[in-house]
Length: 211
Image 1: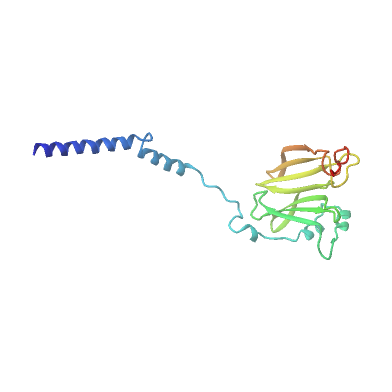
Image 2: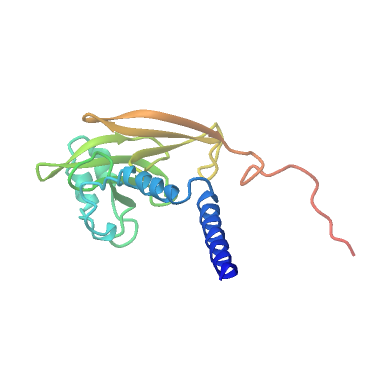
């Protein structure tokens, strides 16, 4: 009887010891799990854009050619030169995204040349009171704009004297951000291209074939 009682007591002590060891493993034991839940609850949920309820592919589309033709800020010469390259295919790209925080997607329109696809104008349109308003424009040689995570990114190719159209000497990349009621520049990068590629080539003797 005494032996059985001692065995029972010893088993109880071993169980208590295992319990304490499990609690001490990894620091605070079960309290770690509770702290993780608190941290997750404190993390703010991402704020969706005003028009993020639908799929991007279902965003409202506009006629970019009509936007250009009816835009009083764009000169008549560019409008007259804007013609289809083939059939009814115009040299115009259109991008949709959230740039100005409006209730409808903003539209970025890039106008290019037919032959070389070199940008000649980029425009941003924001919907206001049911109509699209030109809120940004850049009419420079070799200019192109894109939307990058809410920023307007404008790239301008830089040509030195004698550069062929396909091989500029470098580029300026400018980031714009909507503030108040207009775009403000907030970053800028200039890249110089290598002269050893493309039309520049590397001067040297022509390779010889081995017999």
